[in-house]
Amino acid sequence: MDKIETLGSAADFDFLIGEWNIRNVRLKERFKGSDDWDIFPATSSVRKILEGTGNIDEMDIPAKGFAGLTVRLFNPRDGSWALHWADSRANVMFPPVIGHFDSGKGIFYGDDTDDGVPVRVRFLWTPSSDMPIWAQAFSKDGGETWETNWIMEFTRR
Image 1: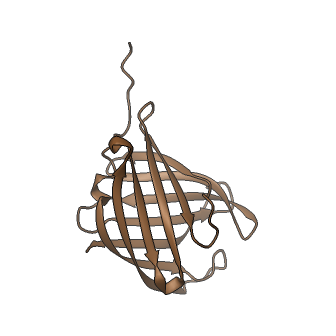
Image 2 (image 1 turned 45 degrees about the vertical axis):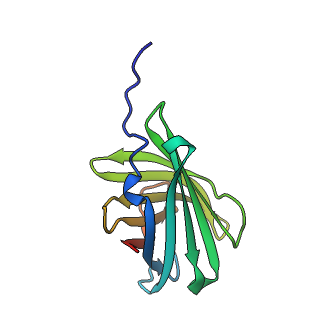
């Protein structure tokens, strides 16, 4: 059997396992040239699932009146991850973002809508054992330009 080269491993998100306090910095208005940010707290609990080939992240965001859930699944065939988000406001899984870790960063892309307008979505993970950072950006032009609209700074509880 041929060995399959992979870019990542099921351990790529191990830095995130545990209990976290989160500082959210979210753009109040997207695609308006705004630099007005909303800052609010959240907490998160992340654990491995499926014999270590995925993880689940349960997030409480009481300041905004909702809770969220991320399911991350590793694909050993190509080394990619699929990240699936759901929250208590919509109660559905949003379209996944898919990508991998390379040169110490995780970058993931997907397609979604923002206020009914199609957007390309990019998640950027900067791993750290004590303060990982997640950043979300949207593009209305297929990825030519990006607007970062949400940043989460994690610190261990």
